Every structure is written in structure tokens, then in C-alpha cells.
Image (cartoon, rainbow, N blue to C red; front, side):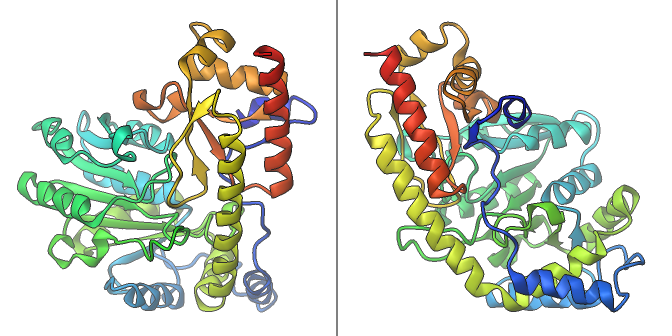
Length: 379
């Protein structure tokens, strides 16, 4: 959708999940200093610089997550490299990976790159897109190797609850499966919900859990391509061999920047969160005015809302074309870019994803155009 939007002058985008902010100055200054001191011209160790990994381990400890920085943490070129390297390390041809439906669209591609088969497990929209543990267990076969999920969830903005995650962990132990927990949006929790509970806090599944975090969203660093994974040292060795073959090491300048992010940018993250909460509320207020077009569930976290398109609307705007054709119509006729829900799995059909990581000006402009578009078509 972003590629299509780039060819149409004047489009306002609520599509790609890119925060509107620039990287905080403390992070940029640390990178500049590292460049000027000649620290970034050569490869780091394959798992990352010792200083960066030690800083990660200290940060994780404050969140009740304990990993050895020398043997259990790997700096990666973004979270998708962490996920792909892990899948390549654990999957054989035809092995199955269970993913929620709907979920982040690139998971499907990463599983296929690793010769695996993605298997969708429907989330319960009626229960605020909750995990259905019985559905997960029904879909486990002798070929199932892992669960892969994003918490908070993209595109629904759902926080999976502690009891749901514990039940998932019990399934993993019972069936000897790995769990890949991608927690890129963990810092953006709204409604006074407090911090996100992570399975990385549960000691009993350390040998089968891969915890993944990216700096892209929390620190406005999507272009820096830096993330990390943390897991038991035996599994880390297998992943490290793949990581080394894929990228040798994460970008060294980005490692210095991300280290500074952990050391100096907590206040920036809190500021970003407060802005996103205001933008979420604005987006929901604008959606409320369009309740003849959409119905939605208010997201608890992340910076996406995933409204369902009412049946009579989608039939008129995109007869037979579903959410893909609906999103194309919005792009070409209203000049508003969104992501069709079908990109996130079968349960995403008849929805679209809107990102409220954009500025309030862009959000208001997008909804002004949508109101005008639907006013013309349904007056």
C-alpha cells in the first residue's frame, strides 16, 4: 500500500507502522560520537558488542527477565532478522508454526523463508481478540514446532493476558514446542493497564522461549535496523550460527545508538507513549463519528486500530473485492492509505488497519477525507 501510495500525489497515509517522531537527540549524539571516535568502521562480534549486550541484560533485569549477556543475547538487524534466524535454526522443511489470526503479516513470509508452514489460529474478536487456547491445542500436529506471536498484537492492539500466556506455556511444555514472543510494542500500554506481562519472566520455559525486542517503534528508530533476541544459551548457539551467515553482525553504529537508547531515552519513550494515547483517543473519536461505516474495539496498546467494515458498506464500495479492494478504493478515490485486513490472516478480512503513529494533523486530514468520501457515496 505504501508503494501504491507513493505513486499518488497528496496521499495521507495511515498504513505503514512508522512513528512520526525523529530519533531522540541523545541517541543520535551517541551514534555521532561513536562515528567520530572511529568505533563503528569494523565488524563487532557476531552477537554484538559486549557493552551493548551487557546494557541489554541490565535493562531486562529491571523487567524481571534474566539472561546472560555473554551467551544468551544476540543483537540483530531488526526484529524480523531475529525471527527469521530463529526459524531457520529450529525448523525443518514442512514444519509448522502456529500464529494468531490476525497477526503481523511478515510472520507468514519469514516462516516460508525458513521452509516452514504457517498455521493460523483464530483469535476471538468477540472477546477483544483474545487468545483461544483450545483452538491452539486443536491445531497442534506432529509437525508443529513453534508458536510465534506479537504481544501487544499487531494489528489489533490487544494485550494478551497472563493466564492466556501461562496456558500457552503449558502447551509448549506438553508438546515440546518453542515460543517466539515478539514484544516490539511493550512500551505503549494505555488505559492505566500497567506494564505488559511477558513469558520471559517465567523461568520454567527458558529453554524453549525466544524473547524478541526491536528499537524501531519505542525509540523511533525504524531506519536504524536494530533489535535483539534473548534465549537459553543452547538455543542461542544455534541461532547465532544462522545470524552470522545472514548478516555477520548487526550494524555497529546502530548498536551504539541502541545502547544509548537503553541508557538515556526512557523519558522520550514515555513522551511518545503519551502522544500515542492522545492520537488513539483522537482516532477513536473520529471513528465514532463514522459508526455507519465502521465498528471497532478500542486498542489497549501499540498504535493501531483494526475496525470492521460494515457489510453493506463493503458491498457497495468493493463488491466481491473484500478488504483489499476496499483499501484500494480509499487510496485512489479518497487519497487515504490504509492496510487491508486480509494481509493479517483470514480473520482480518472485512477489516482495515489504521496507524495512529502519525501526527494529529495527518489523522484529522485522513478522516476529513474519509468523511467526505463516504458522504458522497452514501448521501
